[in-house]
Image (cartoon, rainbow, N blue to C red; front, side, top):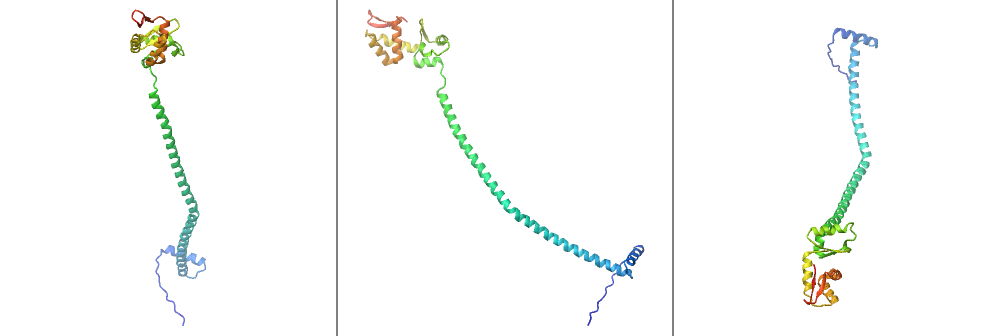
Length: 231
């Protein structure tokens, strides 16, 4: 038995002018009744809206699929980039460690040099004379003006002996000890005396003794049975 379709009445109110326009369009499209055309318009609009909804859902799915595909393609490269970044960070850290070690190694010699410089700080002429006790012209012949050097020592309180081609600077304390030692020796033989002087004052003391004998500033006094000086 054929199922009887039930119709539902939908009431639409339109301005008369609009209805006339729809009637003309309906007739031009071959519709006998304007109501049939209006019904067709409603059905067509509904189908289009449904198709649009379907298309929107399809586009969303397609968009998600494309996004996933792109992400899958990028993942290997992203991983490689992360690995590369990690390696670069490790390399930078290693370079920093090497740099620090190098700086430490460079600092040590500098500290050593600094200490050595403090130890080997240049001494003044007076300080050198005080340590050595005596300075001969031969000791400073490398100077451009040796005479000025001895003048400076003399002005600083040293005893300076001037000879034709010889200058001898003496620390006063050294000279007093030298004279006291010399005057305490009763031996007449100059060689034996020289050995005694060297044993206490070193080679420079022996050299000083011989120069002073040659210049007549040191001699053996027979009346005193001792060595004496004219200075």
